[in-house]
Image 1 (cartoon, one colour):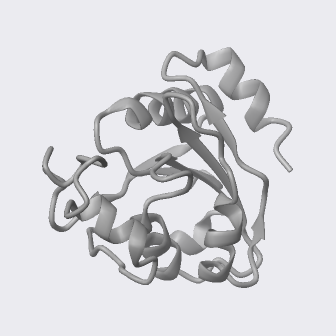
Image 2 (cartoon, rainbow, N blue to C red):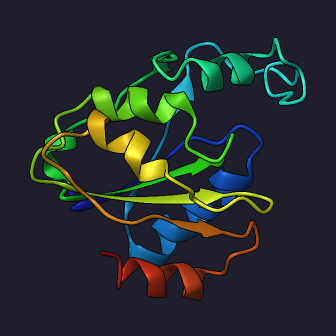
Length: 158
């Protein structure tokens, strides 16, 4: 089994495209983090103060359930973890994912997609969910990031 995993959550398909390119470029296994209750367009409306994403932003303890799990997580040394930037950070479902496994001794490499927001203080919010892991500084990629750019970054993380 491959020792690298690219796990990702994608609400609109943008992060999925980058994650698939990354997995292909570095020969990693791929796992999609799928919410048990899919996000609707109304849920994703960040301008609506009552939307699901706004509620999750306002209560960082909310943990959306995930449908499915990674088989044999113990076989992976490095997990490249992809997500869209929501409210200047990772969606809460990323914490759900991290809290679902024991990452002690593993390396987690966050990457994100966004129309313009940077990673911000994302790692500060993710670190408590993966105690004992080496959490590398993340990087934001444009939706059109190429395989060469992704591979070069993946070879020099941390």
